[in-house]
Length: 146
Image 1 (cartoon, one colour):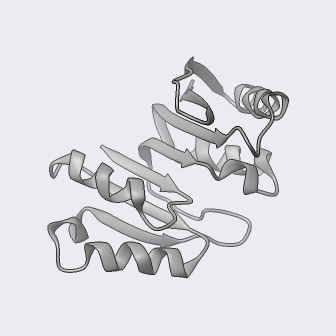
Image 2 (tube, rainbow, N blue to C red):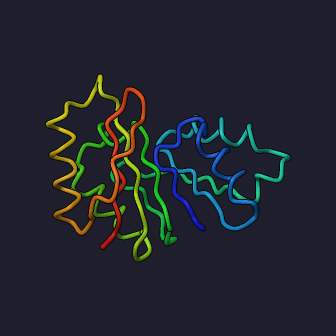
């Protein structure tokens, strides 16, 4: 399984996801800030996780990966993207058929209405909603590429 942790920050989820893969895939840790990628690098340097995690610096207006992935994690970062339509189109383009995307957004930054608008954008681009997991202090949705 190949996973994209987009907006990975210091790698809180990246490292744990890589551990769960048990040598059966890789995690692409993607972030716009080189400093965040440096923090991930420091966590994994000299460990077996180095071979399971690929660090990727995003471009200003796009993620810029070519690998196809089975799952994308976008945790507390979609609200920071200037153009969600372009962002969601890029995410769907890198997902394998039936690939899934988990979006979690902080309730204190993203209104229920804004979250619903984002869900509708995603559906119009070729995603379907398959779950709405409960994540504390968050609005969340699991989308699947149709």
